[in-house]
Image 1: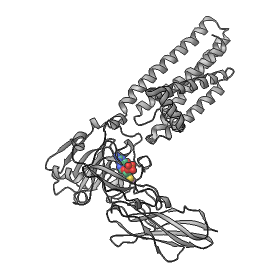
Image 2 (image 1 turned 60 degrees about the horizontal axis):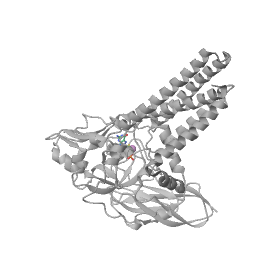
Image 3 (image 1 turned 30 degrees about the horizontal axis):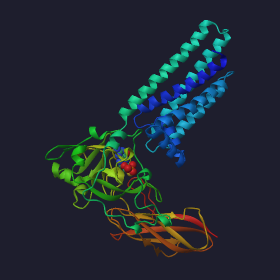
Image 4 (image 1 turned 45 degrees about the horizontal axis):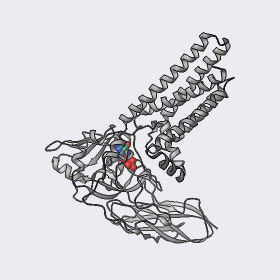
Amino acid sequence: MNDRKAAALAGVLSVAAAIAAGHLAAGFLGGATSPPVAVGNWVVDLSPHWLTEFAKETFYLYDKLALGVGMAVVITVLAAVAGLVSRRTPTPGVVIILAFGALGVAAVFRQPEAGQLGVLAPLVSVVVGVLVFRWLHRLAAERAEAGFDGLSRRRFLRGAAGVAAGAGVAGLAGQLVGAGANAESSRAAVGPLVPARPAPPIPADADFAKLGTPTFLTRNQDFYKIDTALVLPQVPAEDWQLRIHGLVERELTFSYADIRNRPLVERPVTLCCVSNEVGGDLISTANFVGVELRDLLNEAGVRPEAEQLFSTSADGWTCGTPVATLLEPDRGALLALGMNGEPLPIRNGFPARLVVPGLYGYVSATKWVTDLELTTWDARRPYWLDRGWAQRAPVKTQSRIDSPRGFDRVPAGTVRVSGIAWAQHTGVDKVEVRVGTGPWQPATLSAEVSRDTWRMWWTELRVPVGTHQISCRATDRSGYTQTGERADTVPDGATGWHSVTVTAA
Ligand SMILES: Nc1nc2c(c(=O)[nH]1)N[C@H]1C(S)=C(S)[C@@H](COP(=O)(O)O)O[C@H]1N2
Ligand SMILES: [Mo]
């Protein structure tokens, strides 16, 4: 084998080892996305429509395979080039491997399901790639120094064969481990969750999206996501169980089939995070499908001493919800299996989560829920309580301006302003807007879908030339008008009016 062939081989084998190692690491990291898979998804997303159509027609069921082969060809060529340009020193090859790594990190992070640990898989790739490349490079260099004697040649070839075998084993192992650790196939097998009581149709005037507000229902991929999970728990529906125990007459355990075979209800609910700053975007709305949590609790027979529903997720996160709230006949708390016509996305709690209208997520919305214990407030302390957050946290009445954006330039005169308001389980009654400290002016509200969901608003304001603050405030059905006093999100939710500064010319 001549010098060039050895150099190209070193490049190709180290990149193969890097990819296989990253794939294996992703398998072990559970929710993490494998770098080659993430890059593949990216390629698919970037492909123009005609190309994906062409691929489907030409390769039929094998379009994914064709994509894999295509990527393999491109990567092999680039890796061989990396080896060839590194014949004097390994630095150019190392730089190319680092660039591959950066691509891997970027690709993994565009995947919505990548947990915070997702970055580890591409990092493992890079480290393995660089180490293997430097090692093979040294063996190749020693071979040249030794004048291509039999011993140094054999050492290089043995090293290369070892790397090839190792990469093959790691890649296969990653495939096996990853398949076992991912709940996506289980989710795909759930099939339609058909509600016996569907949500009301959403009227066309439930949002003012054309005027700059969000859409009434948030698409699943756009739904805000908050949790402590470094990698998303992967719980196949077949393995999932929910246990109800503690201060109950009879302990109950449900399988996924037990729950999904009950009559399902569908209910639009706006979820909101206590960490949402004034004007923040940790708020979204979905049609949740599930069963009445109250029915399950009543079947278990809640004893009068029970104050707290202490719920635990598959990854050990805990949450405390007032039992009295959950037992209110019209609260509408759900053990949810689906949202917006699909099984829950894994990031939003597949196979099952709690949804309680009117309470912030950290005291109510346990994702990947597996255990419901009826208990007292003294006996059990949920996760966020020991970290400075309040025991009880009903959602505070709030509103936000979506258009114009802060620091926008607008034409002086009439300016259209729009946004959202929410007061879950109480209902929004009124939104008012003002320029500077001028008089509050009422805005037009969107059709109310339910008191558990947000409402959109819009109006037109006279804005004179200059820089001005536009503010909004909501009033809820209890007659409470949002206080202008600013409070931090800790311990039980921010208060204050949202305002944006615009310059009119
Ligand atoms: N298992 C688990 N469930 C959880 C959390 C968590 O950290 N772990 N965070 C809660 C918080 S703080 C919020 S605001 C909601 C967010 O739900 P989402 O990610 O579906 O928007 O989930 C709640 N459920
Ligand atoms: Mo939250």
